Structure formats: C-alpha cells, structure tokens
Image (cartoon, rainbow, N blue to C red; front, side, top):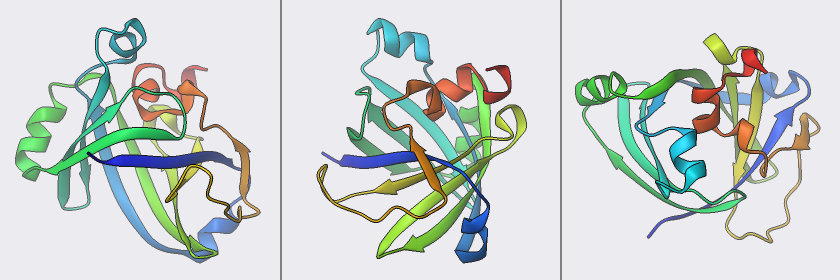
Length: 161
C-alpha cells in the first residue's frame, strides 16, 4: 500500500519561477466526482493524468488532510486520452513546476483554463510530523481545505468561486 503525506499551500508571489528547474504540462480528469466522495458512495478518487509524454491512473483514499492512501499505475497515453473522455466534471489543465527548497522537492501547480489564477505549492513528506522549511512564497496552508483539491476543482473551478 502506498501512503502519501502531502502539505499544500497557496502561492503568494512569483519568486519560485526563478528557481524552478523543470515544468511539466498536465491534463487530468476524474472518473468520479466530489458528490460521490462526500456522500460516502465512493471511498477513493480515481484520476487519469497525462503529464508530458507519460500517463497514469491514480487512486487516492478520501481522507481530508495530509495523509492518504495512494496508488498509481502507468497507462498508455492513447488509453489515457480515451479515459479522459469518460471523466465527470471538467478537466484540470495545469503546468507543474519543480522547485528544490531546503532539501525537499516542491511542486508548484499553475492552473489554466477554468482554474486560471490559482497557484498552489505542494510538498511530500516522509512523516506527518516532519519539520520542513517553508519558502517565502508559500503562503497560507490549505491542506485541509477540500475546495483546493483537484477533484473539487474539476467539479467547481476556481473561476466560479
């Protein structure tokens, strides 16, 4: 079983751009929606993602917060495109920038399309109580706020808030 321990922050400036060492275009969608998760009808989100020239099927348990079960499997890109056509809600279009800070890899997601204007930084940790240095551009923590989860953004985009 895979466990993801992740913290999520709003980005307060563009200072991260100068230190980003890679950018990956991403398109993703969800086989289920927020309503299925909130009602308890489903206990995990099922995501299809194309990132660059690779594609993945991802399953995450529905816990809100920094620690969740996560399973990810590579799939052929052409099959991922077909799966994206089956997704509910809108598709998430974003650019992921990779930034090293104080020994940790930060992923800065700059959302496009219906979620344009939203920029969120995430960092994966080894343990829930791991101490880490936050970059100056990492503002308010939104780890426990459902509306910032990609699944929620597919159903209710940032531009509709």
